Image (cartoon, rainbow, N blue to C red; front, side):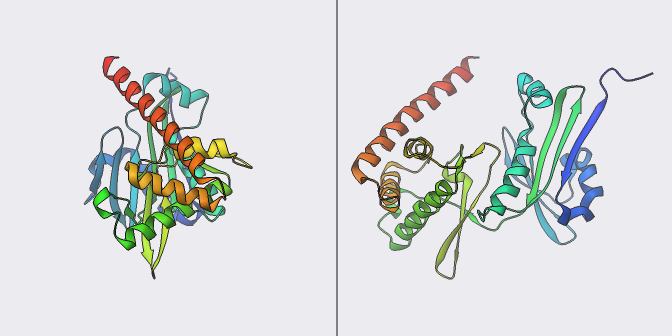
Length: 256
């Protein structure tokens, strides 16, 4: 007798990690009890760091999927895990750094997505943490200069990260030069050319404190040879509207 809701697995594995196929196939069963795993984050998603054959990996389980999205991802749109994997591959082909993708796993029951996970190599890059008291330090100013130039590079390549907050931009100082990596890349668009208006809308998502934000805007405007004051004003206005909308959405989620 056939099951009414058969279980289906969609798994994509980076060819460089085919030796991990058995481990990856068992990950849905073993994720909650991974030996010696370090819990990096637990909230809407669960992120764990673990080791396999002397190499460190990070697994991100998208465990809070709304009832509507379970059907959307099952029929109409790729899951966050699959988008993370393919976006990572595309970014690296464009010479935009992100932790190396290893695999994406989706488990379906019928047309409903029930479990989804993205697996990548671990990165030793650090999260950006900048507050007002640090802005007078020369190394922080250099970091913000480098950050602005990095975002200009993204936009020039047609990369629009739709969750461009500083927790999703990692950095490292290598021989006196700041380099960056993007994470949380499931919400991303690739376009041939980014207009100035589209750049402004994307920049309003950058979650720096106001002083650092305005400094980065000014530096960004200089890099793209835009009129600094008008560009900064439009970005600041867009940011205020964006933050208002985010607060409104949060209130609606609390109500419903």
